[in-house]
Length: 180
Image 1 (cartoon, rainbow, N blue to C red):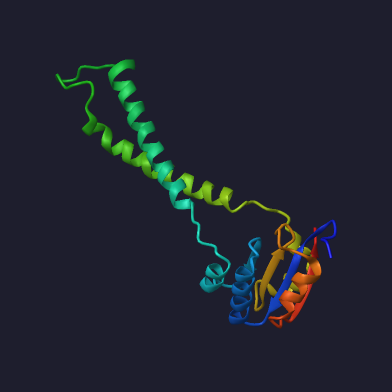
Image 2 (cartoon, helix red, strand yellow):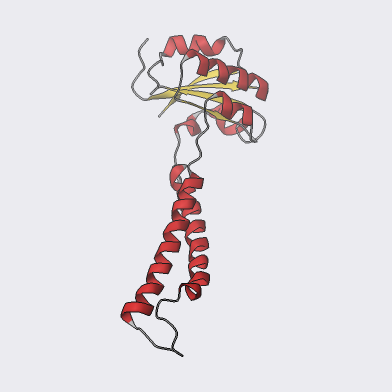
């Protein structure tokens, strides 16, 4: 059965993290790639089961830190050498040792800010609406004691009846069709 217009995906509810991990691993092995797990606390096995292994926040933080270092070092060099050169006690205009402390501080500042804003951007936040909020069982159990696996309709392998049958093999508490 083709996907109906307005369907976000199928949400399967489980009582234990081990059931969720088994279903998530089975879905990944079956070829589903557009899926996500929702748990009340971190379950590392679930992240590994769905193939989630990318963490680009550290790269964004490194690039931000290097940008901060280059910005401050460049600013100090421009000020001391070209814009306002002052001969103080016969010292050279370009004294990179004096530039080290402010450049280090800007490295820390830019790295911290890029990590914070990069994390928000890469996580798609702020997200004031998500289709899963329409599922009544998700609202009541996602943050307390239930474990959810959502297979999204944008997955090329997704077919409403076949995917529902696939999820039913893992004996979930319920399988709900989530609308946009």
